[in-house]
Image (cartoon, rainbow, N blue to C red):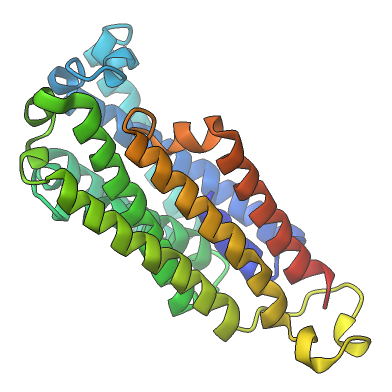
Length: 288
């Protein structure tokens, strides 16, 4: 959904052509990412069979034969890149760069300490750029820093959880885990957790979101509290809570192996994400 970030923060959420462009871009990118996951799972098939969760994946478990997975991946890659090229040339370039990055990650970067989490973070940033480029929207440097910090936080959290779950088998599953200690990953987590919420706070305070529509509260409230930036900062405590909650789950050691699974299964974390989204939409589109 990071592809939709530009749609929301550009003020075009209710602009039908922009909404259609973004939905189409998400569809194309989803085909590409799914195809890349097939390739990654094929490369890691033997290692995934050592993992308590990944061994249940279709390819690792043998439910999806490797030749059929290669076929699906090939069709998906060519289809997504063809659709992207016909949709927008620059969107196509972002998709192509994302594909190349994921291939390099699957065969090389995932075995390089630090560079592996950088590659994961870069994939999130490319998703945001893909959504922005089709709308010709300039991304705030503070928002980009927030996305980068959050992506690094999730990537490091994934490594920290793998280290806890796999224990003595960690090195057999992923070579980079031999270069990470629990203390080192804990320090990384603290660093990126702080930078994630702080960069979001700076974004809400320093960047002026577009005025969309709705009742003009600044006309009836004192200027001290009616600035739109100050209203957007009401989301900061929610972000801090979400970061702290996820960090606690990571240290639990058994639930944070998949960020998507954690976000969708942990009710307090899911609720904080929903509340954050509602507040952002309300501030940007409802109170000016």
